[in-house]
Length: 451
Image 1: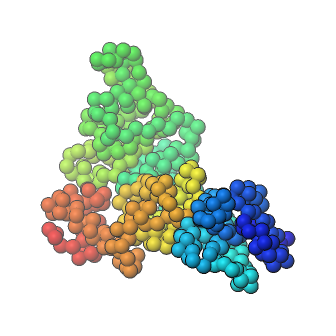
Image 2 (image 1 turned 90 degrees about the vertical axis):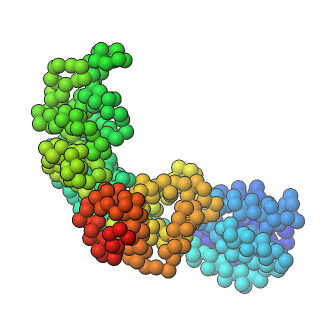
Image 3 (image 1 turned 90 degrees about the horizontal axis):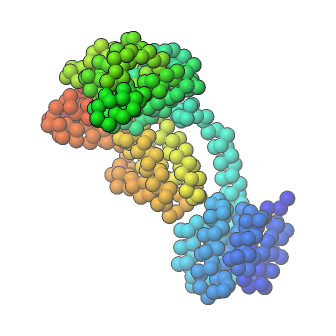
C-alpha cells in the first residue's frame, strides 16, 4: 500500500499539480480549508501533511493555517507537517516550525525537492513509530506499583518478597518522598493478609491527644465529646495491616502503649479497662535517624528493637542508577493522558536537568514537577523551564553527572551545617543521614567542620 499524504491547499490548480506529481508514490488526499483538512486528517490519519498557511476564509493571513497546524498536532503529535508559504513569509514559516511543523517550503514549490523532504519525513515518522513500539515492549513491568530497574531497587523488591510472608514487624526507613507507603502496601498485598484491611496513619500529622483515640479507640464518655464508643485503627485493621508512618513522631506515652500491643497483641480503648485482643500486623516507617533519637531519649530503645526486627532502607532517588528518567517518563505519560495533552517527551536540556538535579524531595518532588510541567507546557516537549529547573540546569551546564551530583551534595551539606551552626548531629538529622555517613561525605567532598 502507498503511504498516505494530505495536501492542504486552497488553490485548486496548485493542488491538482501536486497530486498529479506525487500520486505515483503516495495515496494523496486533498483539502482546501481548515474544516475539511481536520476532518480528512481524522479519518485518514496520514503520517505526512503539506499545509498552505494562507487558507480561506482569510487567505491573505496565516491565522487559518496556524489553527490547522494546531488541530493536526492535537490529533497526532507525531505527524509531520510541511508548511508551504510565500517567499516573503519566512518569519511565519519559522514560527510554524516552533509550533511543531517538520519543515517549510517557499512558493513556487520545486516538486523534486519536495519529494526528497517527503521521503525524509516518512522515514523519520516510521523510525519514531518503531521506537515507540520498542519502548512499549521494553518498558519494565512495575513491582506492586513501583518502578525501578536500578540494583538498589531490585534489592528492595527482593527484600519485600522475603518479608511479606512473615509476621515480623518491619521498619521502613528513607528520606521523605522515597515511597515508604508503597513499600508497606506491597508487603501487605503479598502477605496472607492481603485481602484484609490496610490502614494508614501519619503519627506526625495528628495532635497527641487525638492520636491516642485514633489509634486505640475510646469508650463513651471517655472525654468531652465522646458521645459514642468508637473503635480505633488497631481494631479496624484486624485481620490486616496497620501502617504507622513517621513513627519517630510518636510521643513516649504512646510508644509505651504501642510496645504493649506488639508484645501482647492487646489494646485498651481510651477510658476503658477491658483488654481487647487484636490480630493486626504493624508496619512502621520514618525519615528520621531513630538511633540518634535513642541517644536523645526521644525514642524508646525497647520499642526500637521491637519494630525494627527487620529494617528496609529505601535509597534516595539520586542514588538509584537510571531510575529517575524511567520514573519521569512514566509520570509524563500518566499526566499527559490525564490532562489530555500530547507531549512527545523531554528536550535534551530537560533530560540533563533531570539527571543532574539532586531531587531532595525524591519521587514525590519529581512527580509534582512533572505534573505541573505537563499542565503548563506550551510546546510538544517538556523544557527545563516547564520543570522549573532552568536555573538549576544552567548552574551545572557543561559538567559531568558525577561532578554535578558532588557539587549539589556539597551545597546541601554546607547549607545544613550553616543552618545548624556546625552541629553535626543536627545537620545529619536534617539531611536524613547518619553521623558517620555525613562525616564520610564531608571528608570525600573536602568540607571542613564549620565551613
